[in-house]
Length: 546
Image 1: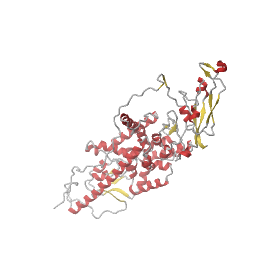
Image 2: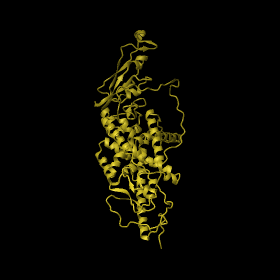
Image 3: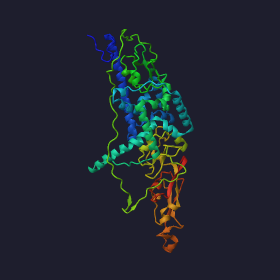
Image 4: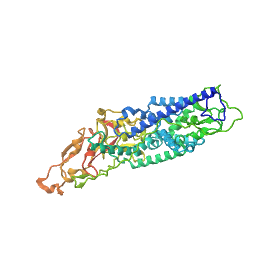
């Protein structure tokens, strides 16, 4: 009894032994593809959750996935991760791009969704020559920017950081609104399973860049699959060069190939030249889609130095023609939907005693930016930071936000309008994968001087209104601020202090001991003066210790 070759072209005749062997090879290939897909989904979902998790609790279990990204590992001089990724590429090719890199998997997801519309959409790709001038030109520019410390250009091209900004700026607000909706209903049943979090725009510039990046990535993925990876991405170019020498490669058996072009039309990397039976392995991301579409068993993932198989399956002479491929690509799981409709309650006006509207604080004009404890210095921070926004996502006090400055575009900086850097919080140093913020303990952080407070006499309430305050001194965690009597001229009950004669009240003003100040921003954040505070923090170029 003959075995029915349900996955081969029916016009060709094969022996039972040949069909059994082909089926076995195809089963192994399908299993290999499913394993890759499962790991890609796991990595993609986990990294996405890292950026969505505003509590910072997931980093204890999943934080290592951010630290094995290529550019952060290079900047952090993490030799173990770099060696692992290079060896992985030398063994299996660009598995990193199809499994570990979140932007690469995101492109595959967009392309897969588009391919679900019809078979024609699924088989829409064509072979194109490698644009090596553009690829290596972008790599040279990227390397030069990295060496010169132009962090904004580096951050713009790094795939991991680009995806992080997309999630932090575009997806995270939807996630947080969904959380707030659950918190609204939980509050009605006296449950504390959820709590509300502030949803606010940290940087308009970074938001626009993230939105433009998302549009470009989606359009390219819908039209041409992996165009971004194989023409723009410097990480893809580096790993593509290494993958030329990988031990396991996808190869085409010229004797079995019928030049039907099914493999080329399924290749989202556009790297299969079916006419010449060749594959550009510098662009191949080992997705194995081509193997699943070949109806002749001509494509396989094999050891590089393996000779031609003695059991080559040949078709009978004189038979020609093709039929529709009856096998469909299948995935084990689909990405979870992260967006949900949420009803947003209108923001209420903040009023003082229900009468006077409280003005929002405005950001002071700092001559020196403030960067988190563990950064050591501005130079070290900006040379290592990839602007992935992971630290911004987990900051519980809303102190970190992306910079709008041209030289530090999208890289985080500290500001204290919404909160201050609490000495016991070390979340930003815990999650940074690139070495821009080195790990510090709470004890170490409380002694690191990231800046120093500066008093502005003309804004201080005791001077302008003739009343007692002392908020800055009361909340200073290091005791760097002391209140002393003010002997100068100040306002009092609509007039000046000397007009009150002996009834003049004694007011106190802050005096700052810069040797004890750590620049945490508690004084700036809690100062009641509006819109500009009477005390603010200037950053230190190089961090010190008290």
